[in-house]
Image (cartoon, rainbow, N blue to C red):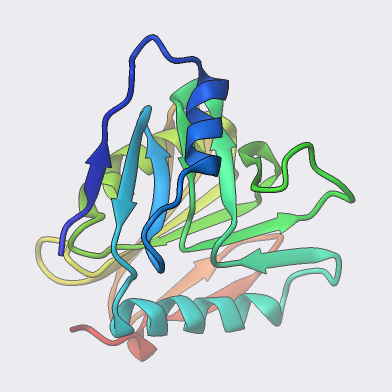
Length: 194
């Protein structure tokens, strides 16, 4: 199943677009994001996708400080890139309060993780890393189940503008190291490949 996009009036302000995103009744179980100013509705991810996300999520909880949060459904705003994005995993030292109840500012995040689905490959490889880098999120982990040549996990860091530098890349079956503040090995050999 592929993603559905909802067009909007290009004259509409960012605040109007966010309000529409917040107030519309979207299909139950879908992932609704604003990507490059376009509302995108994606189907719920499948079993393999969720197994990979759960594995990473569980490992992160073993190393993050007590006052940090690891989310799988938290929206982050990147107004400069017209983005309201929902990473598959988001790690953030959560502030005591936020201005909005539906999302947090992306610069608060320390790590964003995306696990590709057939419907999200282009966004996970191009649009989202550009937005995450522009927001200054220090680390971006892309688990690309559909990479040419076989599934890979790639860690990006050192954001400059809307571009990350590749810090490391491994094929499924190898370990990938998340640097400080995580200092964590992710064993991609435990990820399903289908």
